[in-house]
Length: 330
Image (cartoon, rainbow, N blue to C red):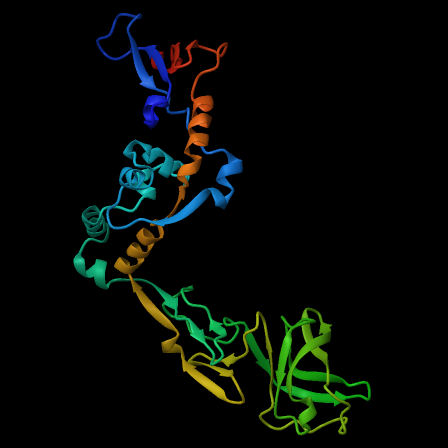
């Protein structure tokens, strides 16, 4: 079989109803683009049939096909492997074309290269390498950390009590909506040190949808059943493993017995229009290629997919259907 995709696409003939044509036996032959090749699901969904590939520079599908398969006419295999229907939108543009399109889109060089498209968070890690704030999250220009955004909430303790069964009960001044069994709490500045540390919540008491009291298990039986709550005491609980508090201007987190403060200005960065567009283009560069050993499987499938089936409406041959398009008369 030929390796060119469009030579495999069957034809369709319809009566020529263009201006000036009066002969109803005058037919126009076109390719039936509704007959589309595909990689069957059991192969397409199995990564072992593919290798990862990064498009370099202005490489085209035919360049890659020649490099990988020694046949530039197999560009359609490259496209099918990535389910690409519109190469103009889904394939990286040549640099010259991209620059022209972007300049037309944004109007001036200043707006293209200096105009801010959006703001993104900067990845922040603690000293152990744990991610406190993921990078690349799109934010409004006026975004500031408030603790809740980083999934960390704090509230003051009103009272804490312990029992012989090592259960500590915490009552808070203000309730917390998102606290639940299994959440990790961090407690410090209680006069009796056995109450201080990080603990998983074992039960919660709610008023409506707000938790006003919770319990956790102490590491040992407390000598003081109702310890003193120091003036600066607060309980911090976490969601998704991030521990911290915050306000409109900075983010503060506790790490290895010390507090660390990060100015809000250091937590976001501007992304220009050009940076945004280049990132979008670069994301298109990561594709998959069918391994050469499986090309014959695809060829055999195409031999089954493309031909017309005998007995089908308007059938003439395996490569031709013939008929009149009623819409052409309207």
